[in-house]
Amino acid sequence: MLQGTGSDVGKSVLVAGLCRLFANRGLQVRPFKPQNMSNNAAVAWNAEAGEWGEIGRAQALQALACRVPPSVHMNPVLLKPQSDTGSQVVVQGRVMGSARGRDYQALKSTFLPAVLDSFARVCDGADLVLVEGAGSPAEINLRAGDIANMGFARAAGLPVVLVGDIDRGGVIASLVGTHAILPPDDRAPVRGFLINKFRGDPSLFDDGLAAVTRFTGWPSLGVVPWLPEAGLLPAEDSVALDRRPPAEPRPGDLVIAVPRLPHIANFDDLDPLLQTPGVCVRLVRPGEPWPREAKLVLLPGSKATIADLAALRAQGWDRAILDHHARGGHVLGLCGGYQMLGRRILDPDGIEGETRKAEGLGLLAVETRMTGPKTLREVEARSETGIAFPAYEIHMGRTEGGDRARPFAHVAGHPEGAVSADGRVRGTYLHGLFSGDPWREAYLAGLGRPPSDRTYRASIEAALDAVAARLEAHLDIPALERIAQTGRASCPASLV
Image (cartoon, rainbow, N blue to C red; front, side, top):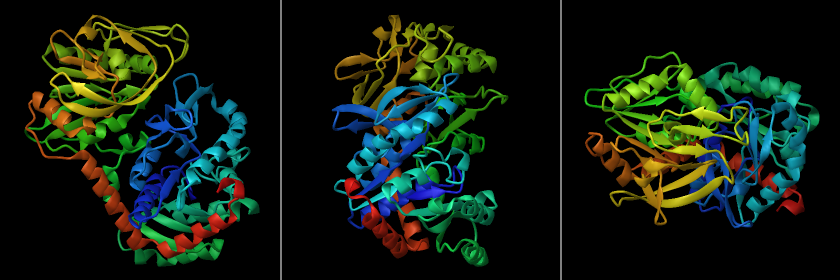
């Protein structure tokens, strides 16, 4: 199990890279994360229930690194932050309800049997399971009932490797401090540490490694350099968006404006566009000027559509979008963004919160009613021009209205989404559509961008292989293998 001295130390990428490294050696490798918090979710199959469920995006990427289909059991507890109702709680792929932070702290220990059940299912038939922690075990105020870090590691009998992020500074103190405040029983599973995101000559940190070992007794398992290839992999936390420097278009670029919604969800829809030559994705943050040179406004998904629609209006982005359309611009709404483009959003049961009705932007003649059950499925869609592309749906609500007579696409022979009478406003519940190279290229060509030969899926595969090669070069892989063997030996019989 890889745990971190804090959030965003790079655990997800390290697990993905190690998954690919050991898969390349011919092992049956599986990822696992007991508890995750993210609005970037993926659809995964629940074989036992015969239905689709949802897991964190990072575990879907890690499954891809293992070259296996994602399963709901790879991330049995997923928390999806909402506006004023706490977080939606997903257990083994199914929505169990919502809970505020304090309520969840009292509730989380009740999920341990489900977490251990999922772990046993992931272990079945695997040579190696790589487990990712969440946040940090040093958050001792959250230790009671923990299922994300040491609580799970001890329940499952797993050895732990601690990850420190040197890029944020203070890595020696974070590692030594974690050792100092962990109680002895929680300190015992730690078998060593590694340093992540090092820039420059790693030999300059030899004294730092020795200092950590001197204070903790933990051996160093390596120093991972800054991995530029990691920037090509889908990010799970929206903090990655905020750290991205503002994009500056080059002459001839197709500019796409994307408002940075407070509860943006499934923003990995943007990744293929960010990697497409000749495309400049301008993420517009609060307080920033609207890019009037944009040819397309893309309204992304949202975990709290009504709240994000209010935030969009508070920034004046509604007027900017309407002005953009009036000047001949194109608008595309994905999932929650699709709902915002309609005339009204109704939430009579308060699924999203206290606000039961909101006026939409009115660019599509449709109306959305927030209602269950939640739609979760992978699909093969076909555009109005006959181009097939893979996609997935993960949403609450049903959308109907006159513009549905002009569908965005067809799924299993049925119309999906809506297009305005002028053809310049489109809405769809389909996520992942830009990952389909032929459809993406055709859509962008319709906006005036020359076609390219960029293959998105191939770029992800190449990035995973590159990260795996870097880890093999800079980590003590034989030591990690020995540590993993102690995990198998100590794992309770009921879990293997």
